[in-house]
Length: 212
Image 1 (cartoon, rainbow, N blue to C red):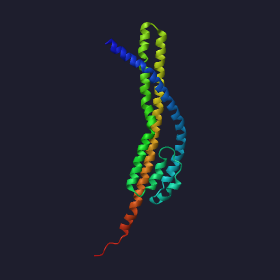
Image 2: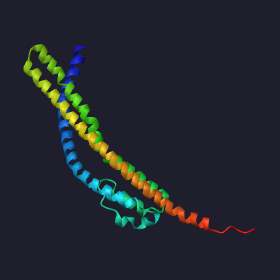
Image 3: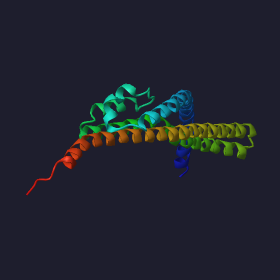
Image 4: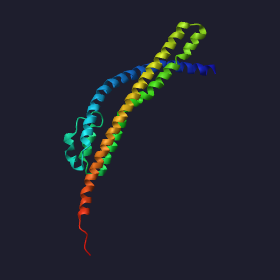
């Protein structure tokens, strides 16, 4: 039994260095994410107003010229507007474009989703692993060793929570952006479908009844 517990203790202690390295790696990635996210946020705020002003008065007859009027759209959704307008006459291709955007949107939030999950997990691991040596130092009267291990435990906790907070914030905002773009694309797809059905409906309604 002692051998097994010692083995577990050695394994957990050996994991401290990889945990700290991963925390530093994800912390750097989160800083890079914040830097790019700020610029993207400003661009999205600008394009949102332009898109709303362009799409609000849109009619099915205006779809043909919409490609030339689209503003610069930052992020993963940019190419899908042009793709949807290019295949607007085919219902199957419209559905394919919408599905492709949904997949691309999920891939685009992979990094913040990973930071949201891995930050707190690694922070918790970095907290619990040094607690064993800290208790050993306390029992042996080695206050310096205990203080060092507690310092490592608290530092990894804080870094892990910072990573998780950055990931959560950027994840929620990017999900909202993707939801807005999906709503715009579905609106364009609905207009394209209406453009296909309206002429047929008009022809049927204006046809004279057959006299018997």
